[in-house]
Image (tube, rainbow, N blue to C red; front, top):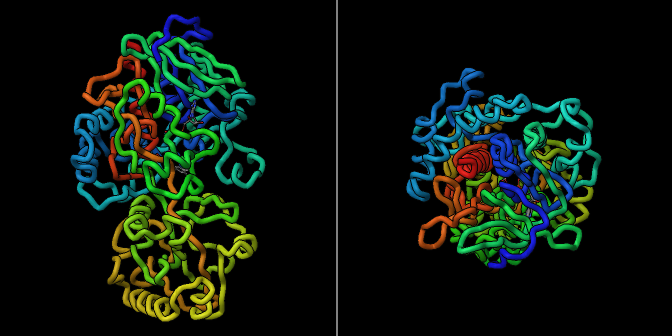
Length: 516
Ligand code: FAD
């Protein structure tokens, strides 16, 4: 949009669009270097999907790991990342992430409000350089007394509370909420950061091919915001945009995303494309199996310690203990759980009582699920197969084979339990604790669909997080990070914390460049 002559409603040095991890690291980076920084956030809350996250951060070689006795380095991380991602993304962009990780943590921890700690959570691939006990760091819990109430109350509630309409629990902010709270406090401490909620970027303003500002909608009026140094787009992906999901991902819609509601409809990607940016990886998401809810939504499900997944034919199609993104990709390959008429059923037996044998980030109410036809129970496997419309003989054969594998400790079909990640969540006994037989009635089947933690395709960026045109040249004044950018990990999810960790590093790099 080339109409730079009109009057400005707001002026700043750096405009940051969105308030997830990448945005706030970028905003803090710019503001702490004396740049007048404005953060605009579309929704009522700060934090986006980052606030929902466990907030593991994959940042190899950082000082927080070292404090907790973990010997890691950018080079060890590089060996692993390269082995997993290979040539799927430019090596120099991968290196910018890996070489920038430790510096990003050091820079942030220089502010007294920001603190990280190591917690075990395995890397996701059996590749050279892997840390089987994990290398991710997490934000330290944030006591509410450490910040002004009105600021911390503006952090998005936890996913389960927001989805179920329950009050935000008292006590410290944890996980992704702690990260957002800490970064907001850091930003505030600079004295150079301003924030506007309920303010949505609609388009970028350009002059001679450079981005010099943006338009945003606030309470039905249009704000023209001038950004003297540049605009950082870190406004999530397009996970909540049903039309774009159909166009770019061939999915039925946007109902099954675990992304935070109300925000991530791809506005920033669309605006960047209008300003001349190239895109990549639009068919990609951070996938996950998800429990289908009676209201039509779905919730991220991981860490199975019991049961198997069967498709509509009554057969298994993957190792159910796979890291969630890899399981999602198996679902895509098998076309299982990807549409409303290709069900996946999580089949388990009565030993778990009323509980699901796995972690769902939003708890399931068995009665409501049963009434909605999403949770079936029967005294026999035969009866269960009939209830879920699966061939009775096929389900019997599948379960019989699986029980045989459980007895022997070897999953001859999908090698479940052979990887460190599989075993991280195991609670069974015997030779292979990941293989828990399905033999005691009543038998259960719960519906699983393909969900995601956000899309990961978007604006193509370079080592400085600058948005690129189709010809590979940067658009002056325009930067992108997080799920607004095409991910540095390509079609892979190498380990816990790559989404937010990489968003933070590229947010930091963008701010450093704008401050030069
Ligand atoms: P977001 O954090 O969603 O932030 C984008 C913000 O931009 C939102 O607040 C949105 O409202 C705002 N916005 C959108 N459009 C506009 C607009 N037009 N104008 C202004 N603002 C706008 N990843 C990890 O790395 N580690 C984990 O441990 C982890 N655990 C997870 C657990 C769960 C339950 C979930 C759901 C996800 C998890 N993820 C994790 C994935 C990760 O949370 C997301 O991929 C990541 O947070 C996305 O970051 P982002 O900055 O791109 O977007």
